[in-house]
Image (cartoon, rainbow, N blue to C red; front, side, top):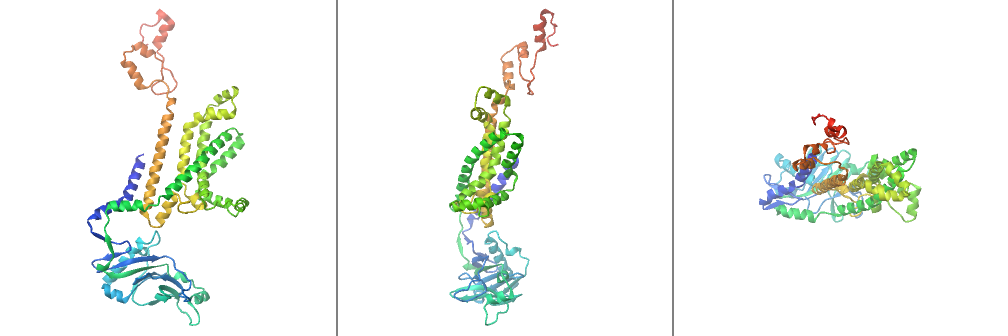
Length: 501
């Protein structure tokens, strides 16, 4: 419990660390926008930072540019992450207006630092320029050559401007794409990604009023997509309703089978609990997809399950069923077999024995298994992602949302859902402990220590108190017998004079 509390506090501290930072920054009147950064000492900054992770090789208005990335409107800085180096193209007029000098080491280092800072905030969980162990080069030339590639930082086509990756040599009678196909060159490998920004003087860097932490908190919860919570809740509830019935019936029927068949059934019902969730999802994908006769038959009859919400329910059902089944089976096997046989001699049917005896007596364990199965369905990730996919508002559950929010760089949202899952898991465990403790009170036997003290304080005689049959304080079924009183009862006047012997 202490470890859980510590982990919960750590998560909360991490999740709400930005709030403390916002509160500390509340005295600042203004701050730069998310796509802007400034170096006051260098005297310039960047506006409108944009990162393009993928380009395209389609022609633009009949003009073949090779593999191209768009240059955002107003951008005067283009950063290209090449296979062997990183090049930064700066527009000459923008550099002069911003006071940037490419021959000054301090200015170059300041510009690279600003680019790395904004690239990290726009990476969305991807690779970072700051982690690339490559040389940086700042140029004002419009074209450069490196290896087998030719890079045009501002290639015009139609009404747009593009950063173009072309073969180093292109004959006049061919296009860049044709020459790349002839030489077997993959133009997409020439640029890992491209960043754009506008170089401006420090006073022209875009700023906004610094929000208070209350504003940021309201903004966070206003923009938060709560659909993963409702999808998880709906999926887990439906899966639990089916799992509860199937788990009880399977456990009941397994009890009444022969030992060999029981071992086989138990293995089949339990195997999803030990298989990796991705394996379960892959098997479901094969079973209900077009690869098998079952899947093709369902598709022909209009039942398409793959990448749908019913697929999410099936995934949750498969991974949660073993918990319900194993818990119910253990509870049923712990019942007194002689009591069940006695009910049969009275003419009770097996269904009546199950409903009137087995279920009420095993209910505490069944309730615990039900809650555990619900929690397992709520936390399912691998099987659901494999079989149902990631569709917001349809199959995206909380665990899937955590993964993709983190991959997209939305760490605050991912941490929020992590805290929600931790709190929910804590409540599940707490409910099981409380319910189990309350349901097991009937098992207490004998009088308690407090009752013994009450009897002693009420003036009970020593002989009467000693002659009271009760359980030993250490528990167990052994009775405490007053041997002196027993001797007096059996021997009468011939009993020893000393009671304590």
